[in-house]
Image (cartoon, rainbow, N blue to C red; front, side, top):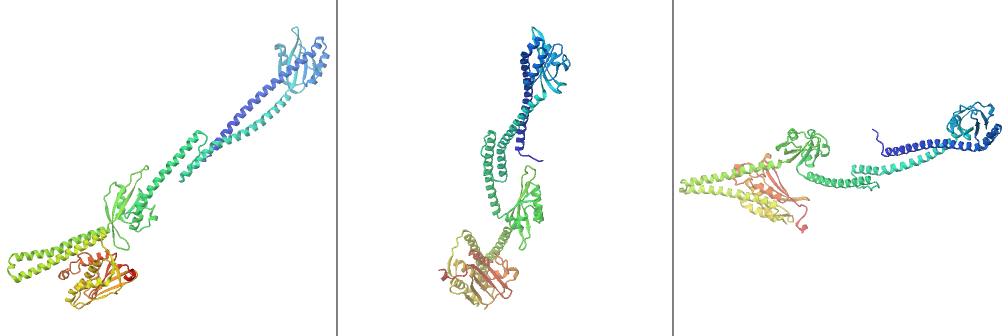
Length: 600
């Protein structure tokens, strides 16, 4: 449908109304002029007839019809009027145009009959004498209530029409001028009315495109001024509300984008409408390219797809854990929480799914369970042994000094193991607590004296097995560390190396420094560790050979303590080992590339 501008409704209406009014006035004026001119002509003919009456009345009284005819012709030439004198019997005795004797009887002429009966008569008809449409006016000439004759004056109608045509032409030109002026005035008024509405339309279109800065100037018309003020007020309110909505949206967008939990929102058809970076990272998909696509097409996980369908169909869906096969890398566990969105005006709804990566929590839970089981097992074994030997002593073995002494030594050994386990657990707990509360203090010190002190603590056990301990560390190497913790970590590594190395096999401590880190390595030539155990040996209570570990007095916590000490310093620990070739444990500390002298 073609829509016209408002001005093309207003302007034709104004112009048409003006033209119709002008035509009505012109027609009325033309009609009035026509009637007026004809009446004026009748009046002039009557005046002429009255003047002629005074001139010929004496000739009529004397019966001199020849003189009457002569006067008619003279007066007709002077007044440009046809003059005819008719006796009461209808005979013509004088005429300005023709010879009266040649003219027929006029007793039946309508103007003559009317003049005789009513005192004057008028008629418009075709004159056979002159061959034209003619207007006639007849009046009687009386003397002592007797009619002497009837004087008839006449002029051709064409003469009247010529005068009226000239008058109509003047009216027409005046009408054209008035019509042009009316058209101009109509155009001006149409523009004056439509321009403010056009401004309102342009402002509304700019508002629709998001620009609310423009304001309307109030027009002179009260209604349009009120409309402009309403539009300005609406623009201010919408602008304010959009700013609030935009701020809220940006805030929510920032919050959702910065969440470590993945968030996916989709409509009732399963089409993804929003996704944060965390969700895209979890499923290893493109955040932008996923928008507008079906969730089942983007995330090809049957368990997730089933959960998404349940979320759309049900109001409350219990949390569910799904397995995500990440490539590359180990499997991930995602905990899904779904919420269906309320239906809008169109009757449609959608859903939001929040995803938590609980892989680490599950792993920590497994470690916790293993830890509890291991602690229980490690503590139960010596406690059971102590309890058994105490019961044996109570049952009479205490009376045998030799057996009693042996039992007490066993009890003491198990008590020492319990004490070592408790000490290591307290150390781990203290390390974790101090790390979380940041109560570990660091200082820049030389590494060689710290390592020498750790070697000195291990010499007693090393000397029993004739195991030499060699330190390879330059004097100038320094690091920002907690000396006591580093000393304990290195002591634990040396102690393990001495325990699991044959007699006379050397243990070497090597310190290397590069641009990125400082490496403290403890190497031995012992039995080595199978590759399958290397990823778990730093877990609490994890031991490769439990019987051998208990025999050698190990608690299963030494390497875990080493790992935590390295992490407290912002580093980590690695191991390289081969069966029957020995092992090398390396503590990686940050802050390489400087010496104590350079730092100070």
